Image 1 (cartoon, helix red, strand yellow):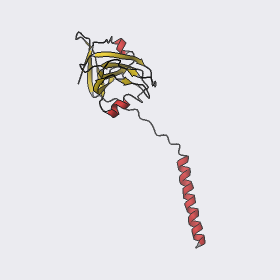
Image 2 (spheres, helix red, strand yellow):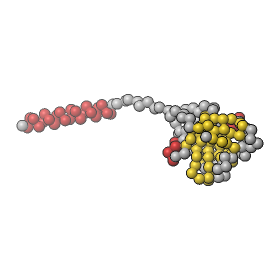
Image 3 (cartoon, helix red, strand yellow):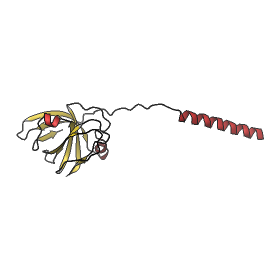
Image 4 (cartoon, helix red, strand yellow):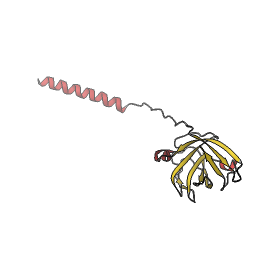
Length: 161
């Protein structure tokens, strides 16, 4: 009987060691899958006089989770793509670039769809707070340099669907 207990204890130790060895030496790398761009609408930018500047495909961030994640962990954004953040209220909007790998321009837009300010050339992975400086309800993120290339100005406006 005593031998039986020792044998059982030995088996338990043996299988525990195997389980520990397999879990501690498991070098399996779980592949990271970049979130794909998913077109949820089209946004058109207009000069203050009504002249169309450009239309782009947009993802819409209108939930707390989507606004928190934004474009984090993305490696690229095409020139004809952007993300539109839809805020619950018009207020000073603040953003940072933590875990954002793409340099971006942030275009702040008020509830009347007019551009009110910019944060241009936001640096990837930077935790510096970027602010709209004036109340805004929407924030459009596009590749860095596009606000200047497209000659966007305060007073220009957007339309989206």
